Length: 404
Image (cartoon, rainbow, N blue to C red; front, side, top):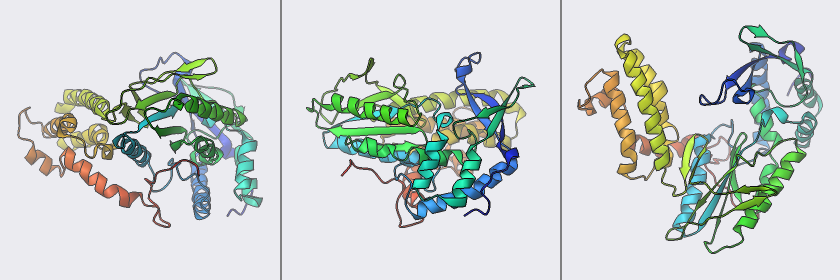
C-alpha cells in the first residue's frame, strides 16, 4: 500500500483558526468555537492518496460498519435519514410505536486515543509498513492558534484526529465501528453519520418495559464510550416518541444515573427537523423562514447585481436549502409542500427582478427548474441508482435490523 512508514514532520504542524459552531452562540466564550485545523496543502494531497488506498482495502474486505454513512461513496446524510424515516413510518403504519434517540458526543474527534485506534487498525489487517505510517501520522503532531493577528507558540497534540484533515473522518469511523454491536445487542436499529448517531426501536404501544430498555442501552453506550475516551453528552441527547396510528401519545421518562431524560416534540438531526408526528411540518417551516430571510437580504442588494450573479447567489443560498434532503418529503401533501413552492417562486421573481404577482411558470422554465413537487419526485427516482455501491449493487439506503 505505502512505500514508506513515515509521515513528514513538517506536515504535522497545523494552524488552528477557531470558527463559531453556530452564529447564535456567544463569541466571547471559548466553548462557542470549533478548532478547525488548517493543514498544509501537500499534507492533504498525501492524505488523499492514502485515503483512496485505505478505503479500497476496507471496502474490498467489507470492514466498515454498514450503517455508518459518513464520508463514503453512495452514502450521505440524506440516505441515512431516508432509511431511518422509512423504518419509523413503516412501524407507525403497522400501529407500532417507536422511540428515536439522537446521541450527542462532546469533542468526539479531539479525544480519539491513538493506541486504541492503532490497535483497531491492526485488528482490521492494517499491519507492517502501513501501520508504521499511521503511527507516524498520528504521533508528534503539533498546532498553533491564530487569532486576531496573533499566533501562539506550538503545542503538542497527544490525542484525537485532526479536525479539517482528509483522513480524520474515516479514522473516526474505524475507531467507533464496534459501537453498532452495542446498540444492536439491545435490539435497537441505528444509523450514523460521522459522530452523529440515531438509534431507534419500534415496539407495541402497550409495552411497559421500553423505558428500561432505553436506559440500559444508553448506559452501555456511555460505558463503551468511556472505555474509548469518548464522552456521551446525555444532557444534549434528545429523545422522540412516535405513537403508532390510532395509538395514544406516550410520555416516557428515562433515568440514567442522576439525569432524567424526557421526550421532546421535535429535534434536529443532520440538518433536518423531525417531529413526533413524522409530518416534517416543522422542517418545512424552518426552511421557509430561513429562505425568506435570505431572499429579503438579497433583495436589498439586487440593484447592484447582474441577473447571473443573482442567480448564482440564490442557487447557493436558497435553492440548495430547498433541495437538501427533499426526498424525505416524498408523498407529502400539497399543503405541506406549498410554503417551499412559494419560496421557489419568490426566488425566480427576484432573479429576473419581476414584481410580486408576475406569473412564475415562464420564469422557472427559463431557469430550467422543476416545481418543488416534481423536484422531490425526481430526487426520489434518482436517489436509489446514485446511492448504489460499486460492488455487489448494495444500496446506500439499506436498513438495519436488530441483532440476530
